[in-house]
Image (tube, rainbow, N blue to C red; front, top):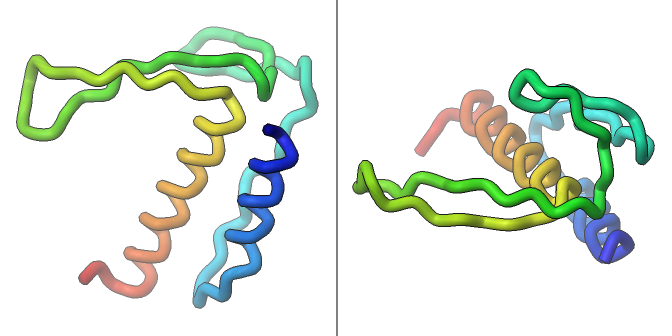
Length: 91
């Protein structure tokens, strides 16, 4: 699974874009990170569940469980998309 994510991330990095942000360096396993004010150990295989708000509803939430590596990749993709829209102009 780890190699699949690495290949997917490497494939996305090869796509040409007018502006490339420097991705955050990957942390080695066991290194301490701060998440929501709490110190946690970085374990790419650890499953983390989050409740995500659904658009258009104040009460409805969706629970999504992914590995820490998948959450980091998703966050990096969202940040890259936002930077590209700010740089190129949002449609």
